[in-house]
Amino acid sequence: MQLHTDITTTPTGAAAGRARGARFAPRIRRISALYAAHFAELGIAPGVVAEVAAASHDELAAWAPHLAAEVDGLAAGAGTPLAAVALLDARTEILARTAPSREGECSTMVRALPGAAPETLQTWDWHDHLAPDGLLLAGVGNTGLRFKLFTEFGVSGKIGLNDAGVGVHFNILNHRSDGGAPGVPVHAVARRVIEEATGVDHAVDLVRSARVSASTVLTVADRHGRAASIEMSPAGTAVVRPGEDGWLFHTNHFLDPELAAGDTIPRVESSTDLRMDDMTARRADLCSGTGQARAKALAADGTAPQIMRPDVSLPLVEQWSTLLTVALDLDAFALSYRAGTPFEAAELGLFTF
Figure 1: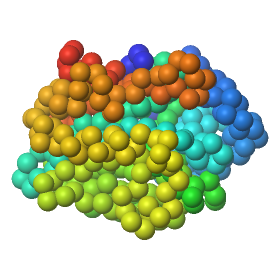
Figure 2: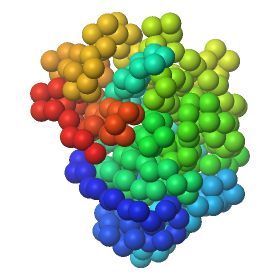
Figure 3: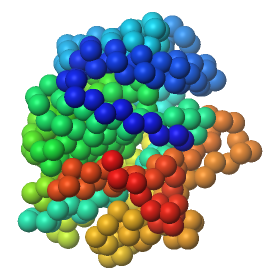
Figure 4: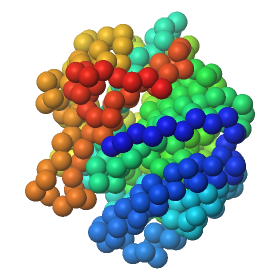
């Protein structure tokens, strides 16, 4: 994955979207075409893609008009129909409607202790053929907070932090309530929390205010040593707090007991439990001070279960790769990253954005 940087002082909205769309038009159009082909390969009818994307965008416009305006501007700037960008922002909602993941993606770890800066690390796992390019975006939200994040082109947000000292990690979940009534794109929920939240409790309130049609967990930490995994689904939102040692680990199954009763991730087929158990077992080694050191503690010489490598004997839609390793420094307002696995991050180091 090739990472591109966009740094802007234009507040979130139509103007920021138009400028980004014009600058990255070829990449936005390319990734939209790749996702459209991916949906078709999964057997999702074009009409369903269009319906879910349009309905999700309407929900976004009602919940966060400035974020919907940015998507509108992105399409206009890229010279592509709104539907081509809306399907990117709603890609999780489209998949939740008819083709939820049977593997799961991403492993997150956050250690938050009172009076100390949180330690965080996440892997981002996805299909390599859908992510030839990624975006590192630094901007200004509509409340005036500065933010930095990583995301896919055309997708509102994913992993990031703001200068109020709040950071957000992102993992997909599956629930039997997914795919019903239209909801706000979960990636847009992440974006609004990244832009606006001034603390963990504020983040919880923002998430609870959004009606969603797909499940996701945002693991949020703030510079005051607080953290929570905010599990959201159409059936409701739950908050999971750290253990006594400050650690929060999350993969792709619900931890809240009530929501877990509706979990549909296939636990035998998926690696979600294996990845969770491995992180938990390494917790002492993960208290390492820097993102690179945490990556090294996790990497296990490239064989850790958090490192996904594609099985090229399978169809592309069933090939999973660890595409990014990222840590958030909430005190320094810095996102540290390596396009690749924790092993590569440990061996080669992380860049700072």
